[in-house]
Amino acid sequence: MVPDAGEVVLDQLMIEEQSRLVMVLRAAGVGSICPECQQASRRTHSRYLRRLNDLPWEGIPVRIELRVRRFFCERDDCGHHIFVERLPKTVQRYARRTCRLRKVLEQIMQALGGSAGSRLAEQLGILASGPTLLECTRSASGVPPISRLARGRGNRSYCHARIYPRRALAHSSRLIRGIRGLGALESLQRLQSAVTPAC
Image (cartoon, rainbow, N blue to C red; front, side, top):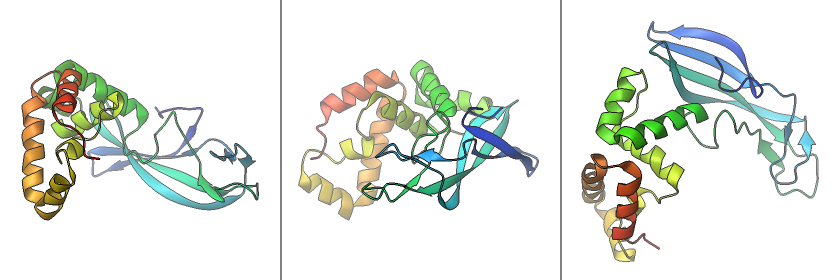
């Protein structure tokens, strides 16, 4: 039921408003390894909570509340005096979705595209809009963000987007609508070749 039983442990399972399951998870290990110097540490600095979306259970949306720890690095010459434990099989850094949910969204997007993929995801109990699916595919394929591509070729376009954000947003949404019905990877590559990213 948990994303990866070797990394995380289920502490609590709750029902929220009769329409959502909430899993409270924590890391299974006692300590963690510093990402810079690879030194193991068990000295806890603090804890905080991450809220993640996960795959639905029998059509019921699932949210994960992940209790994450910060550790002190044991080496004095390390650049990271404090670091956060990494759980790469469960969730990526700064992500709001679990790895397994992201993979499912990528497969839906590659098979159906934005609008149809969004409708299928909703039927499966996954809340994801067309732009969200596009972003999942973009991050998986390494294509720069559409918001950056939409800024144009030079600094002038970037400044224009900062002064007139509604116009820049409308331009971005037109780009998204234009590629929504096509295959995701091919259309994103076509968009990348048509518009030069801002420097």
